[in-house]
Length: 217
Image 1 (cartoon, helix red, strand yellow):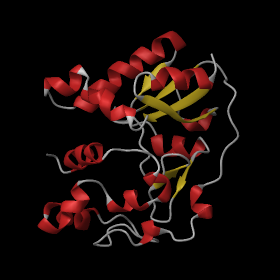
Image 2: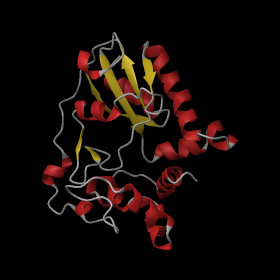
Image 3: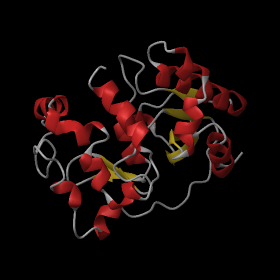
Image 4: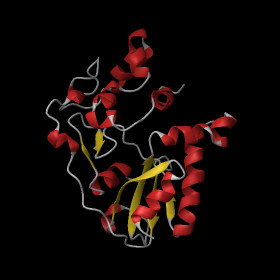
């Protein structure tokens, strides 16, 4: 089994490989892990796949998390791998650390993770810990290195995200709940501003779904 074959299997389910690395003892991967593989949405196919799922249609809580558990567990079984989810805990798996270890994610000028392909829209539905030490592709360069305009630095209308500062969650939430926050409720303007994000293909309905979840709606 190759990483490309795992990516193809994941894409058939609405996901894609968004990074992989060979963990060491310091990476908090399960014992016996040869390769740790990060899975994120395959845009824009992911949203159509999720909307057609029984989890979305049943209306019960945590629809996306339940969908992720089902499809990633199906993917892991023939690989003799373990499925790991960012919301299982405590203790919680160090997904942010794993993302940077993969060589495909970096800290952006505003502190959010940026991905070589997904930009600031990067998210992880799960990780696969497989026993084989798979061949990995060469790590790309951060897209921020060639981004002269850095639109993410000034995109937040209330300055909740900006260079050299912590994320001001109260200011963000207050704006989202106000009439002036209508545009942001369809997706974070900072994430949308990234040139790589704009090419990624995430549909606005998906971003709005995540914003409602962020607000507990």
